[in-house]
Length: 618
Ligand code: F6R
Image (tube, rainbow, N blue to C red; front, top):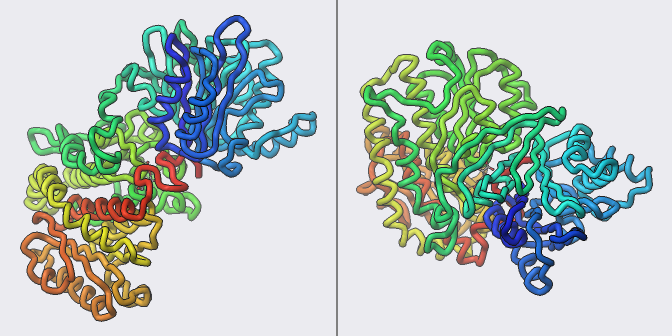
């Protein structure tokens, strides 16, 4: 939610900052702005900010270039307080115009601060929460002309979640940042330093980075980086090296990031599995601050997550309960802490979050920890807040996911969740030992099967184009096909802005079947006809029910499933797979279906309206 970049060095600051914003635009694209400190003894702040996507700002800067500068900050916004407009775009200036500030997060006590400042005669120019912090910072900076000291005094007055970056008119060599509950990383170049919400912003210049901790203030100038706590005491961040390069943050020949990321799924799943199963067939977690006995003492599992990650959690429930026989609940993170869940030391909470920064999930994790539950997180972002606050972590290795709609993150979450389920089963004693070892073999074979699904997507694209004029598209599934149906509908909603809903197939007759009209597309996720044939029989009945009411049925079924072929209007086939692992295959055509239908409707599939990739507000 909001992307921020700061730079000090020898390059043109506007070029570095705009380049960084381009790579952070996935975090929000309601407006964009920059503030540069002009080089030379006079200094002075140069600000430009525009509503709309970054391209608007780039156009304005091309028409009216800013003076040369080697120090600056930039922001791409996902609006919380105040509509997307030039006025509400960041940076915001202090009343005296001497400091410029950008912000990611929400300052919860902004109304009180604003009232206080207004009573002292300060006039506000925007509707944002951020502007109050800009005025406070300007006031403190005026005291001693030290931006770091001023930021320290301001931060202790702020409540909520924030990453702040600031520059001052008369200091062309310094950017100061502060972080609480929102991400901020430092990039270390040679004689140049970067601050950003995400390493993607500076990956073109350096792979050496420092992750900042909670309640830290960082100052970069041409000589280096200093870190202190909100209490003013010297502190340190955690150095790390980024293990992917600029090519991963580019489209690599695809027309969109989403299509590139769909194609990266076989490699991403293979990477996520690699090295996680040791020679004795035991699952290896990354960081574990829990003993085997702690795992054995678990008598209940809660999975908490949002959006697509929640759908990965729903699939995992089926796997964990089957493999471990431990009761498992899946809960939307945004609801979890508000309903007083029953948690104790013997509860394992599995938090799934691609970004590792989703505020709803983070707050649910903190609530779980307050109740003494153990937390195991699954995340794609090394060192992000949720893994850092968890007792154990398994990282997905999807690489950077730029498209706002999650694809490879989802599949790698599934792979990691299966590993967690199997780890729990192994530590506690396996009930279905033969099945579990067969599942491990099938998991390792999954990337090859996903690649096969991706090779065969052309018919799916045609089906999607044919559905472009539909009023709505319904998705139905049973067992693990149900969360896949939910995920297919979410992808279509977010990309195509079309009414799409996923249902447990058996629920249709309890109400939603009335949505079906002549020609309504219904996508049915059909389980394997082998093994659990009862499940297969039931969904064939559901297909017949909707067909009888005029639906056009597209079935996603296993290769060679003749029964489904006989009942559906169209079929999309996937290679054979054990039922519990099938979502790794059946989700893929639904991603492509949504992308293609949205493209046919002229939507921007990498940056759908109103969304942002990293949701760092509650
Ligand atoms: C949908 C999507 C979102 C995220 C959700 C959680 O395509 O990407 O629904 O899954 O915002 O994000 P993370 O996993 O970062 O916590």
